[in-house]
Image (cartoon, rainbow, N blue to C red; front, side, top):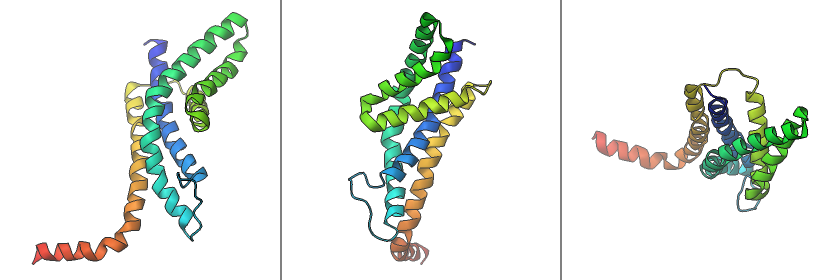
Length: 174
């Protein structure tokens, strides 16, 4: 088992956690992606539950497909630079700065996602076991968060659609 393989599995797990956390946090900070803050009672909750699945659909693929290789590169460069400077304690700081710089590709929200991913990866480094099955299972976390919020959206829309749904069921039962 090579160090690069262990690192890749850890990065995939970190990306899964980052995707879920980023979508929820962005939904809290920017509940309406069109810039209007919901003023109606319950408007924040409605906007939040509608925006999280949308944010998840667009951010998670980018975090996984761009963030994982960028994070691997940031860790590689920071390890080499800290060895060259003969300051091994500078490696986490250099890595964090490189994560933030790579996150700037997507401006402020990209930097926020990169720093969340950096934090998740640093926390996951404390665990010794990083298996492929664990990395693949972690991909279920963003899917679960997406399904959870879509279920909430469905439940909110159900009372308005219930009469038509019951009428359709009666047609098939009679």
